Amino acid sequence: MRAVYSLIFALVLLITCPGVVFSQGDVDYGDLLGQRALNPITTAVPFLLIAPDARGGALGDAGVSSSPDINSMHWNPAKYAFMEQDMGFAVSYTPWLRTLVPDINLGYLTGYRRLDPLQTIAFSLKYFTLGDVNFTDDVGNYMGTVRPNEFSFDVAYARLLGDNLSGAIAARFIYSDLTQGQMAGGMETQAGVSLAADVAAYYQRDLTWDTPTKFAAGVNISNMGNKISYTDRINADFIPINLRFGPSLTFELDDFNEIAVMVDFNKLLVPTPPIYARDENGQLIPTDDGWEIAEGRDPNRSVVAGMLGSFSDAPGGFQEELNEFTISAGIEYWYDRQFALRAGYFHEHESKGNRKYFTVGVGLKYNVFGLDFAYLVPVAQRSPLENVLRFSLSFDLEALQAGN
Image 1 (cartoon, rainbow, N blue to C red):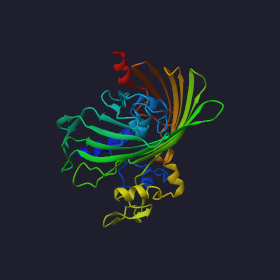
Image 2: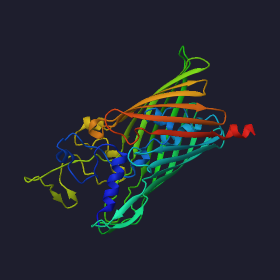
Image 3: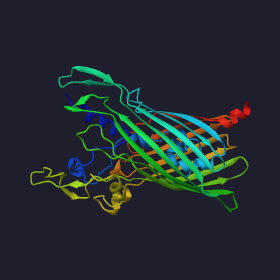
Image 4: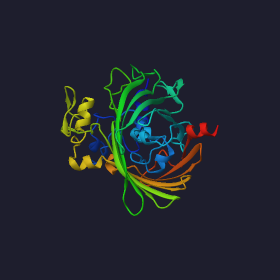
């Protein structure tokens, strides 16, 4: 039987992290590809990093310091403490690789409830399905069809820490079933399970400028959790522990017109793949616990060591560490808080995946519900989200109850 597990796992990484990717710690990226500078970081369950809602997706995947909304769980759960309404929920739908297959998509459900003027709780459910996959043996005989899927369920607690500052913690259960128990390469496979946590903070204050202006800043360290594995005989992989931070400015031009600009910076807090040494025949040099490393550090470290070392383990030194930051910039215009126009840009360095794209979107908001759309335009390479219209539908339950 073919190594089905390996193929499916590589497919998941490929479609969720555009660019050339490989499992950590297996190969010398530079020698293999003939260009030493290409050294992307890979993790398991990368679906956790996909922007789940249309508003954030239209802002170039920026949202750590945008104005609080129902979908704040993914971007910065501390923003829930500043929600003006007492409760609400939203659903979002994102087709994936729609130009190639019709049945890969991401669904997202989230909601929140204010407990009192200081405390708010929230939840979210993210579900990613990879569609139907046919399994065959070594000679091509059909062995059945499975539907690989992954999901995460989150709960968060946000609290005001002052007039201008809030903090939040979140807990996350992650389930990844890529093979649904199929044998692969003579190994029994299983669903991967992990538990993770987020720690976030959000700050906002009014500035005394000629034009009424609000400054905001946010930080969120997400997915801090144990490694995940799909078989007992393969080393576990890091989940995408991520640092997100950035500022925003919102300008109230008059009673009807408002415009906001924001920037997010992101960095994965996981090991960078090293450069492996080779002998005179070009073969990797084995050691007792892996391969001899020429530059960089061993990626097989504990979660805490991986996080702390993620700022100093790149084989290219400080410059490569800087290249690991992605930048998201967005601008949002509101008319009478009912109609929004949005645009954004996402930038990733060429050596880390080369994702670069513009995003646009619109939003409509009524008393009870809001509707948002987003569209992505790639500029450096093909994207799983090109030619796809994403949408989110949100409900203000407080307004709904008041209407009754």
